[in-house]
Amino acid sequence: MNYKVVMLDFDGTTACTVPAIFYAARKMLGMYGYEVKKEVVYKNFALALPFAFRCFSGDENIDDATIEQMIGEYNKIYQEEAEGLIELFDGVVETLDHLKKAGVKIVIASNNIQPVLRRLTTNLGIAQYIDDIVAVEDVENVKPAPDIALEVLRRCNIKGEEALVVGDASLDMDMGREAGCHLCGVTYGSHSPEILRERGARYIINHFSELEKIVLG
Image (cartoon, rainbow, N blue to C red; front, side, top):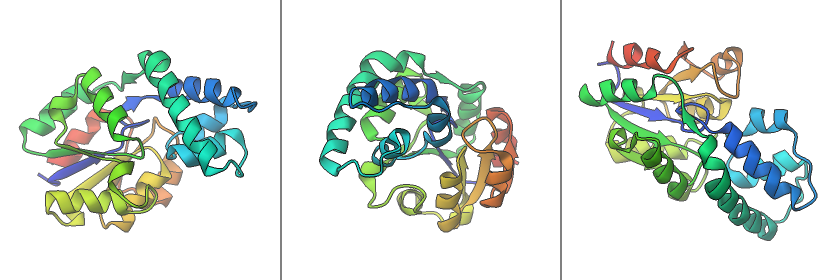
């Protein structure tokens, strides 16, 4: 075994959530008079919600109180109307099953929130493979800061080189690199293989199932 722990990003790496994010963000921000462009959401969906809404709207001056209100409205739309659009990427279930049976710990490391991640992993049928979830509520600073990865290392009592961070965005690579972890980028998410390599990805995969060989050797 090459790695004891796999830190999985969720949105854009484990599950295709972007259509749901776009649907909910466009509807919510439209209520505030903002027009949301699809290409902006698809490129920046990995951001934590406060940053995402300022990015999607093109308005960096939205105040914190309004952002909090937006988050509540967005989460309601997301859960009630958009989650049916979400699907796991091909090969996720089989790969997680093989890793789990081999003794690898699997931790979701995400800029999303705990209630959404726990609900989706359950609804998508992968909760039994997930040993832990570290999300925005658990740290002071979200990705690209290393806090989430460092918290995973602390909880699992391992060194950075014993963990593999798997993600689709530059902020996943930045987080893992600064925490001393090894990095694997996926090509089907928000950022190109070139960007992921520039940020330190040791491995680049085109299909989730390729993760098994990297982790188990």
